[in-house]
Length: 159
Image 1 (cartoon, rainbow, N blue to C red):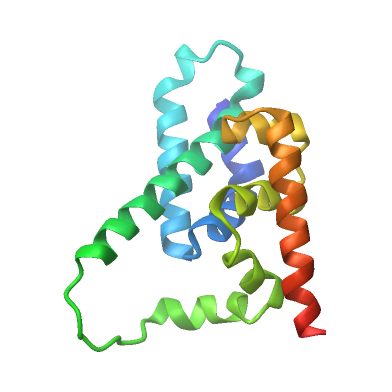
Image 2 (image 1 turned 180 degrees about the vertical axis):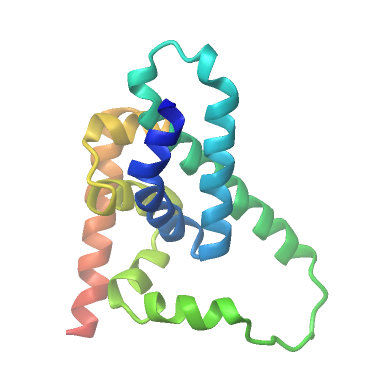
């Protein structure tokens, strides 16, 4: 089946993409799984099955945005003053967080971070990024250029 082939070939790269966007391995895996379930259910309705990977990427980006929006609402209404207990996920993610580049990416605005992650970690073209983010190619260029300038500025401090 085509969905199984897509899963075998692209699952890991889509999870890496989602981890960079949502900053959490478990949530990233859930986002990617949900995207695959959605494409499986919609496979017969796809106009162009050759664009299924682009559909999956866009679905992962959109679902990652939803996770981040949900987190923002939960954090806004979370009770104050409760002690934070480290989870097992923190240990696994700790290795990723030690990277200066990952830390610098976190400080970027959402659109800039998405554009840079899709470009340099996802190795997508400007057209594919525009499609995945639902913006124009010009906006992709703008977000990428601004994000790179901000990263340079932050990373110069680590040098």
